[in-house]
Image 1 (tube, rainbow over the protein chains, first blue to last red):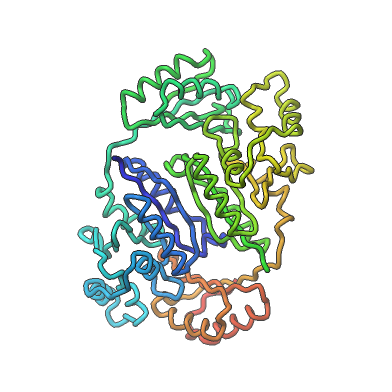
Image 2 (cartoon, rainbow over the protein chains, first blue to last red; image 1 turned 90 degrees about the vertical axis):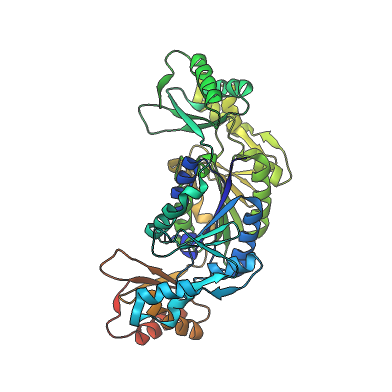
Length: 242
Length: 242
């Protein structure tokens, strides 16, 4: 069975429109390329109980869960505590993280920095072989930071854990609108019911009207569906296949 | 009581990383400027049952709900049906929408286009005074399209419905890191417990280290908190206030 994933973005700053999240789109692209199926994304406030509920529900519903945000040293950084509550445990300080922080901050180390050495009791530290600060993994929940550069560094360090059977994709760009296209898509799905088929209109592009995406984990099935779809299209409808 | 909002993005294309959503960030900014509190965003697949469950839960939990995506003429456009199921009703064809489609497509009108004339039974059409195609409102759920240009046009046509008591914001940029800053923020919150206080580090900006946001619907409360915060900061910490 291919892996499923859920993503929880923790952050008042996203909900209040101060910051446009970039981590979910990045992670969806990366996980898709690895063959992992992202099933759901939630954006919730910096609130321990809400984080706990969401983490508990996501952890049950998906093979892996990623959180983004809320892991710094200030009052609004409550993700670790939320994950701990959600996974039925408590927060403890990890000696190795304390040591990393001591090495990093030296005589500038403050008590508040040590909040970043906290983990849910029972959590593992992963990915620390290649980067300075490892990632907290509690059950199937990976706790990642909100700052995009660091989010990416930390994901890069653990990405090979998630590699699965790839999902093959073909894009077909057509010069006919969705209203006309709909019948062709429905006929294709009747013959290829397991095909993942998407239809995305583009109103301001002079080159094509709709991008159609065909996807499958089975390359032969995909090639069969693609051939049938291309054969079925009216002569002047096809713009390109990528 | 100020209004609360929830946003549901419907779209396999977002979850599979093909398209980075722009509508949620836009809507969060707009609603915040209007004084509306966005409490939660969900991204879910093009699946009638999942949409129905999410719409039902969001409708109960928020004053207003917005959906984005899944409203075209093709097989993967199932939001109207999902909203209908979620709100306990069925899908019907609206004569005024049929008429708009007939005027628009004339002799190019296909049966599949008429899917765009469907609404949940009992829904209203709103915002049609200023744009060609009105927005479907079912209970407290506004159904908006996924294409960003049209999403914005349609929201612009209904935005004044949501205006509420404004949320005032001050940004304070400081040259000290979050570890040091944390104590100042905690002291400020002790004196101003109702303050909405955010702390956003910026690791690659030479000008400042952290942006601190202070917010309140009460302008006097915000001004009081801002004065106390600025007074409390060490002499060389403040970069600017905006």
